[in-house]
Every structure is written in C-alpha cells, then in structure tokens.
Image (tube, rainbow, N blue to C red):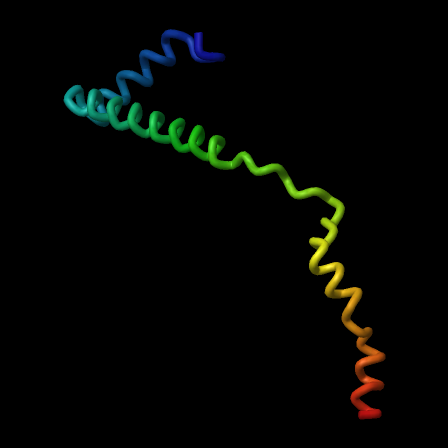
Length: 87
C-alpha cells in the first residue's frame, strides 16, 4: 500500500495520532497541513515563473561599442605618466 507499511502499521499510527491529538484536533491538523502544502506549491510555481533569466554564459561579454571606443582613444597608463613628468 504505502511502501513497506501494511494495514496493521497504518492502523497503529492512526491510533497513536488519535491518542495524542484527540478526535477534535484531527480536522484542524488536516486543514493546516493542506494549507501548508498549497502555499508551498504556490510559492514553488511563482519562483519558477519569476526565474526565467538564462544562466550567464561562461565567456565574458564584449564591452559595448562606446566603451571600446573610449578605451581605444584613452592613452595607455605608461604614456600618461610620461606626459605628466614632462609637462
């Protein structure tokens, strides 16, 4: 039935639960457990719907063209240091 549990084991578990919680608390426990499972499923589904971004690629992305042009136009650090010493 439920894996290796037989009807005797399930009956014993039910009797123990009734002794611990009483017959009045069983519906409240079931309701609370149902709400918890429903909330968990809802949060998992919402997390899947929100997290649709693709994983980052392993290769680094090339800089945008404006950044590449600005880097090419800027003098190298060694050249700028020489200009400061001379000027």
